[in-house]
Image (cartoon, rainbow, N blue to C red; front, side, top):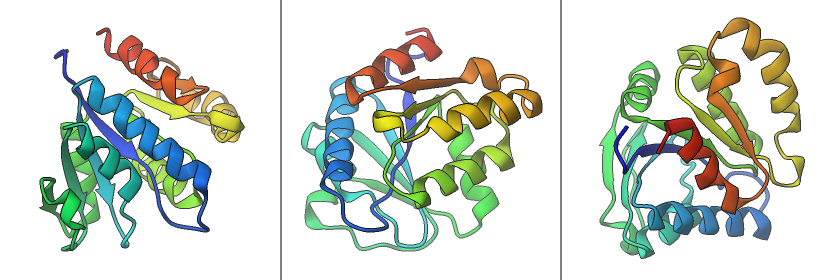
Length: 178
């Protein structure tokens, strides 16, 4: 595994505004940029995680968006590479091809749904780190033990739950043996 992995981030700005969600995305973007990773975000249905992207850009991260259609990004995000892939199956295949690890942030049903559909379609082959801050993914933790582990043989080895933003990198490093 390369010292600078590619992380696919599932994060959503959809739903009611929440200052905590914005702070989590900003902190995560900064944290991961400091570690020199390449960030890839899936953008579908006008759901662009702006806070995550802004903080990562400010720290000099390399970022790529895999999108369903053309988007006009704010000027501060003009350095981001955008790959338009209209077909959902192709978008998901691209994510798996690029990802060394998935990172899933709490905050909205859109994030959990997008990630779940990706795992359902692709299996649990890619390591995953869930930010379980405030028990946001407790149901997923239980679901992973009861369903994923029996459906996807690698699931129990490929899923980690961080309790706060600072732990995300520790779990990514462990999963990728960095």
